Image (cartoon, rainbow, N blue to C red; front, side, top):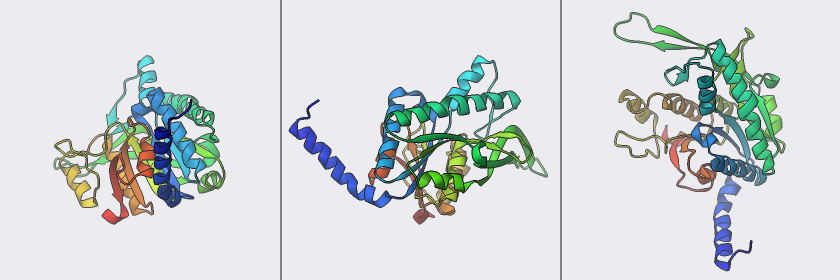
Length: 300
């Protein structure tokens, strides 16, 4: 296809405007959590894969941690297994854990790896069990209330929290042409396999590598206030108030908590962005405005 002169000039203008951002992030590690319903949209999937390949080609070091909630839900429904959530976390009994492993490690991960490679990348799929990448322990939820003298402890099954990250594995990828694509499944000292929230895994990996950016893709424009207006920047005090007011709840809680933890522990900035927007990751990296909610060290 032959481009018109105006189209060619417009493309050249976009590329030159992107140059300062490319120079800024060359050699920097950017951890991206990819998930939600964007993963089930073929056009968005294709665009995401191309964006990741482009980032690697211009010298950035993207690391992908993926979820798979919609895909897991679909398989659980087929098997007649009811889904339950507590504080945004999936209650995971042994049968559910089998489905989680099958879907994340056997379906979603290889599909995403193949898509990135199709567009010229060198992606490698991993679960947290490979090369002892993600060591985990059982996650227990603690709830307090005026009626209880001591906090209630809730066991939600084979759900884990990250104990440690095997940085050596990720360093090999960062210093090569490889793009790691990681399924959030961890292993414990007890030999158990744990389902871990993908946002939390992405956050811990970003902290371990002192990443430049942690980008969490979701199914909403970002964090919104009680009037539905997008909150473009947040401080810790503002987050606390939004939680008290019930504005931050459910599945957004683990996202906002890991974003805050990341910037408190060496990550330059965290963004919660709308994965339903085409090329959302590139818009976040290559523009000043971005497309979601920003939490950075300067706001703390």
